[in-house]
Image 1 (cartoon, rainbow, N blue to C red):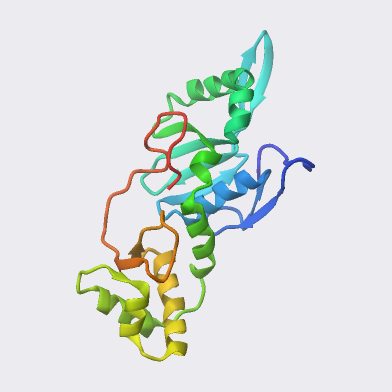
Image 2 (image 1 turned 135 degrees about the vertical axis):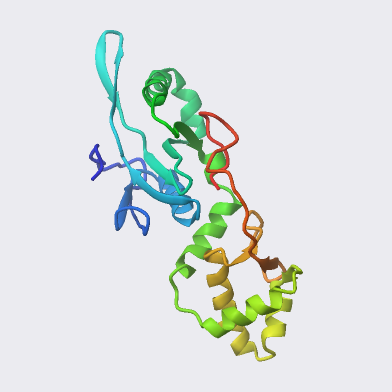
Length: 231
């Protein structure tokens, strides 16, 4: 359960997303936080995440105060990130108020191994990757034909990247069957069985290839505390 109750909010969108990596229904306080959760759900490097995960206490002007980050993200490599989600405009406007909170979290997390504090803004979250993830997420658990996926992998195993429309024409000449193969292809891409450039708009002319094993840095690897690319 979240350590802080999420209130009704008449300024931002509140609701929940269905998750396989967190509580069955994970609540969010804004559309920007919802979008961050979509990226966490889609990212194969994320093992689990939790909203409103932990309260940090600190003293400011002689008074005891507390602060709760928006998300805790746990990665398959053992890294943990406590993440604050903020619109860049709000971050700049309220920085003098937010800075003491963030400093308190960073200080408390220092002794904890593989644990860091991150800030993600709409600049890092609302990218083409978010559009790709939003489109592909429903395909992760959608039924597909195993023989179709096997056929796609066999064709791509020749080692060359190939546009989707060309790949489908090699799978079958029947347009109805091509639509079925496309469903299986989206399943393969959503589950990282088939690779493509998710930072580019998805289209039928986009190239795909067999996924190779690679070592990826975790979320926000480019900056220590002010975020980075979400995926």
